[in-house]
Amino acid sequence: MSLLLWLLALLLSGDKAKEIPAIAISGVSTQEMVVALTFDACATKLQANGFDQQIFDILKREKIPVTIFMTGTWAEMHPGAVKQIAAADWVEIGNHSYSHARLTLLQPDRLRVQIRYTDRILQERLGRPALSLRPPAGAWNRAVVRAANREGLPLILWTVVSGDAGGHIPAARIEHIVLAEAKPGAIIIFHINKRAPFTKHALPGIIAGLRDKGFRFVTVSQLLALPDAVPIKAQSSRLGYRHIQPPKPKTDTDGAPPTSSPEARPSGDAAPPPAQSEKGAGDANPPG
Ligand SMILES: [Zn+2]
Image (cartoon, rainbow, N blue to C red; front, side, top):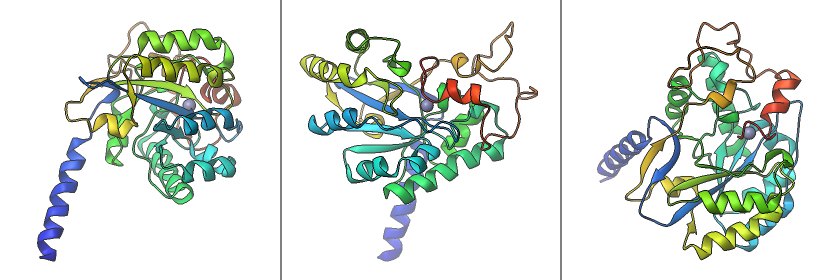
């Protein structure tokens, strides 16, 4: 009997592993009126950022299941927030790398460390595992997809950019963008690391507006698990590295920087240069 159960578990786990879509996912196609609100908690070793308590309180009050993508550094630097998130069973955990590194620039071993080390930190501090990976700044290529999948994580981008990061867009505009662009199966990106000052003002209207349109809220893993969900491949990630790659005449369809690039240094878990971390840790452009 126990052998049967074990075999069954093995079969199920095998199926589950196969179910991870081997693409960068921007959302899903579905008939269900659902959207996934996601919040990035970006930090680097040099830039702690913060925790927007008001956003968290709104989501808690409204009982919205959400996914929060945390960098390992953010989880280390904000133990109080992590404690609250750990106690919030409506929050799904996402891995956002350790140091907000541009994953496309890393050698395979450094890439693996960025994902695995963060998985371990999140599991230890939150008591549950990350269920997906969002690449910092949305920078992805085939190697990043493979690395995430190998750790059992789907690679998650977004359908709708709220534009909240950096505080350049007023709350009314954020609300308008999200309500105009939300569609069934959409993943919507916000920030909860205090780099998005207007999100808390936009959220009540967004939540009410989406509910009025008939949407309900799900986490990323719930979205992917919908019976009729077909994952949609994200666009190539030019945004993810354009600030640090020299302009090129031609763009790979997969958004992959050349592997022979001199920029592809294996230093991803070291503190990134300040300019890069400023750009990547939750500012307006790029998102993520
Ligand atoms: Zn980020």
